Image (cartoon, rainbow, N blue to C red; front, side, top):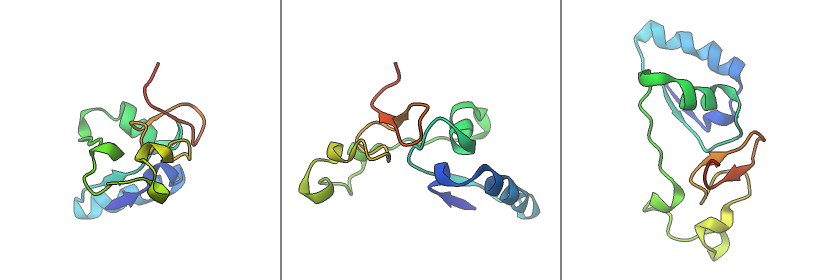
Length: 102
């Protein structure tokens, strides 16, 4: 099962689909940009332990992104709440994104 933009999916929906995996011994993939320090995606990323394999790919590392929104740089997209150009770091507010943890 693949959940895209998982940080924006409700915890209730996530909990309701987890049993589907047991029936078919399935795999679960969570993909997302950051959306605050809350919810199942954040909790699994930070505290999910070794049962998860984590891949972090920032916008500058993606070869398909060659320019920014409207011809600007990728970093120009930062501050819109999607983590673009910021290294994917978030603070406690949904949509607040910063380059590094302090």
